[in-house]
Length: 145
Image (cartoon, rainbow, N blue to C red; front, side, top):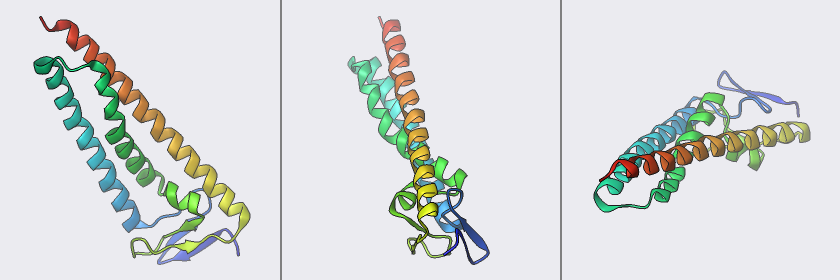
């Protein structure tokens, strides 16, 4: 089989696009949820520092919702699902979760490389958010009398 497959006018392109519009929308929703949880978590974190002398290192827990937000939004933007890339499948159909196996070895390698890049990018974004949150927590803690 070749590297490009056409389903419902959306094309699977190895290492470039492995999800269709419904899958993209699902990842975008996940990303927005993660961003929302990160913002809410940050507000709770700063409130906890102010009212309960919360340890600033607790800010590292913001890595979790930040990762959810980052991976969702990066996947939506790149039209590529990291889990599908690692699993050697794709879905450009309108049905969520309906996957087709990628048979071509070179296409599988391109997909796995792209998936790894997405995971690394998401990890780095989340780590920066967690580190900045900890730093802001330490700074904020210093202003509390």
